[in-house]
Length: 272
Image (cartoon, rainbow, N blue to C red; front, side, top):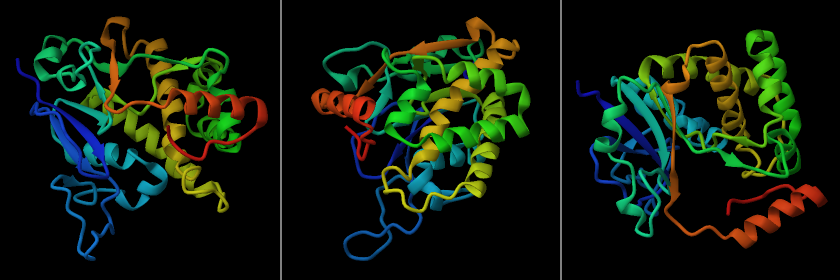
C-alpha cells in the first residue's frame, strides 16, 4: 500500500527545496507580507494564510502556523514538518542535498511506524528547564505547566519528568500519522491558545516574543512521553531520524552565547 505523505517545509523566503514530491514548501507568516514594490509577497509557494489558518500569529508562533495549516488543510495519511534550512536525512554526508530524506527511504516504514522524530538534541550541562531559564523566561513554561495541570492533568507527570531531561526532540520537526497528528495538534493548540489568553509580556523583543514555538518544542516531548507511557505509541512505532542543517552553524558564537546565558544570565537575542 502506498501511503500519501506530505512534509511541509516552513519558509519565509525563497530558498532551494528538495525535489521529492512528498515535500510541500509553505510560505509561513504570509499574511500581510509585501514585496519591495508594495505588492503581496509571492515566493512561489503555497501560503499559510489560505484555508483555515493562523498566519497572523507567525511572529510569535513561528513554524507552528505552518503546522496548523497542514493539520487543517491537508488530507493525507502522514503529515510532517521540516524547515527550509533544516531537514530530515537518511544519512549524514558532505553534500547535504543528496542526503535529504526521500519518500523511497521512508516508504518501508509507513503503516508500521506512527511517528518519526529528529534525533535527540543533548544539552549535557543543562536540563530542558534550566536551559530555558537561562536563555528565555520561565514564567512562560510555568504558566504552561499550570494550564496542563488544569486542562490535561494526566499529562502533568510527563511534564515534570520531561523538563528535567537533558535532551529532547526539538525544532518542532516530526512526521506523523494524520489521525495521531490530529490528537497532538488538538492538545497543543488548546494549550498554546490558552497561554496566549493568559500571558502578558509586552516588553519582549521580536526574538524573545517567539516563545510559543519554543514552548511547543518542549511540550512535544511531554506529549510523546505520555503517549508512550500509556501505550498509545509503542516502542517500535516511533523512529528517530538524522537531521541536517543546510547552512553552516557558527558553533563559536552559539557556544559563547550558551555559556553567557548559563553563567551570566544573558538571554538569547538571535539565532546562530
